[in-house]
Length: 305
Image 1 (cartoon, rainbow, N blue to C red):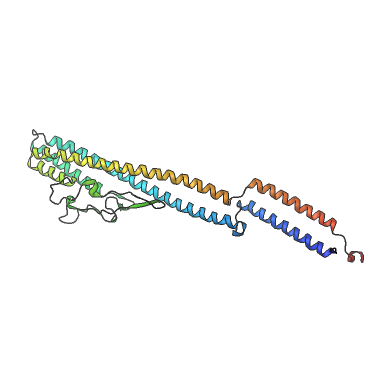
Image 2: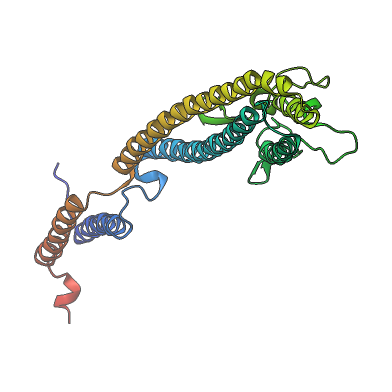
């Protein structure tokens, strides 16, 4: 038994086809306008999950890159400050060598003593250096001055700095120590004043110069060199950390490029394909209208006029 096709059925089918074609054209137009093939979750339920994952990973990667930049700034500043301390000690060494000469009159020793006292104050200022409001040589207590000698009776050589580590997250489960403590750079606390703490050494030199003790001044040359070697070792440590952070910076940069590329392939529209599909759909729509006008004949009402 054959199915009778009525005018109403033909109208309904034509309307459905035209609406479907219009819906496809609207979707293509939206993708062309926004430049994205994923404008809502229903466009590609699987693709949207990848898109969300890529966005999350890119966001985390951006934060890691900011941490790396901050870590490099901190380490570069540490290197600069330690270099300044090394310059101070180099001048102290020159003055100490000059003061150890037994032919200097006391007035000359007093002048050398005065300059070394100023150099000691400069070294304390360097030890209290701050970056972005944070003291760089006081561990986790970076809001407190490590060598605060303003209090009565306080002495730089007897002060102990915080040993806490400042860490920056530069990757998934990857953290780097970026700080050095004052004890590492300038020597362990030495209340007795007999050790190799740089401030102890300077105090002994100042005392020996004040009393004209040439041999006492000469004996401290080795301790000055030991302090300078300690600074060089710390600069080497900073340099090694800088190299590690720069490697992480390069890795994070490459990772962002890869993630952005994958995100683009998932989300961004292919304009060449869109233009072709849009033209095809427009041709189909125009053809549907033309064929529909020819296929659907006049109804009985048209003949009763």
